[in-house]
Image 1 (cartoon, rainbow, N blue to C red):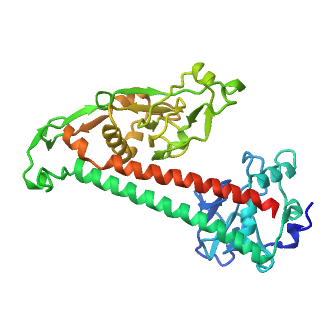
Image 2: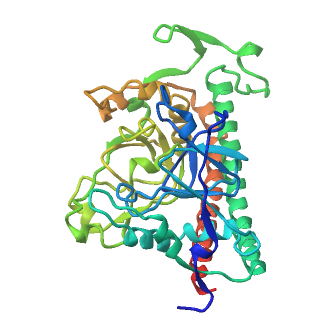
Image 3: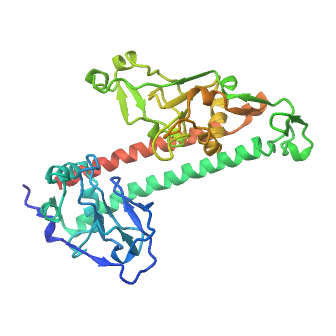
Length: 405
């Protein structure tokens, strides 16, 4: 073991301050993604005096690791002066910030090697626990505080760039949705003179099915009529290693759809795996919609900017060109709640390929479709998403280098 590796217990101490004054503070849960999130727990009849107060730059972790896969839930409070967490959580703090930088320590906790270590050291029968003693016995490199601050600064530069990029994508999405509403809901797209169509005397005709007036030459059609091809995906057998042991073909799960422009996948399948399943290679500019999934996944859409396959819970819609595909993508985005509400079934209502095919969409005249700016917006989102992937890779490299300090 390198000489600068020290037992973490020398630098940290537990904190256990309860909310005895019943302060109105944010109540946060903790995820294996190493972040706090607003709790969704039912608090009716709960004695809030037992909840623990966590101050800024204090940590919290969940000792029970048995139901969290290969990750341990741990996070640093960087956003709130004070907040509340469950009495089942274990808050702690760095004793002296001039010896150990809290953000440097959090970088160590983000390493996948720490997750594996914590799971390996967890013990118990009914449930496995990474207890406080094991936390204190964790060994990690503790360079000079000056070096720690340099590392944290380098890490934060990357993270701040990722955050800025995410904000840029959000602004682009908001712009696209505003344009969609202006052009295809309010019918104020630019006319031949560059003026808003409807308010400047554009010809409108009554549509009996919609019971509203729409621009002349526009139609109300099913997605099946609007699109070129609609299909669902498939999942090769997980029991057959040869279907998953190569990086031949990208393969997306519904959880990756997430209302975004898609530029990469988390998993891959082999050519043999695709051949022996119902998975199909989808072209660039395919629009995806999640037919079912956990949480808010159902009804979310994605825009594919690379060739990939998808699982059976995804419906893939290909159009004749990207002007139609990008228009359809933003139609699905703005109508997600309504579309998700169409789901049917038993305890877990789902969408289906047949149901999606029959959803009606307003089809503008071809010249209007060719003029909308959605393709350019998606191009910009694609470039930013790709940059974020590279930045995330840099983050992983930086975290891996901590062990060699």
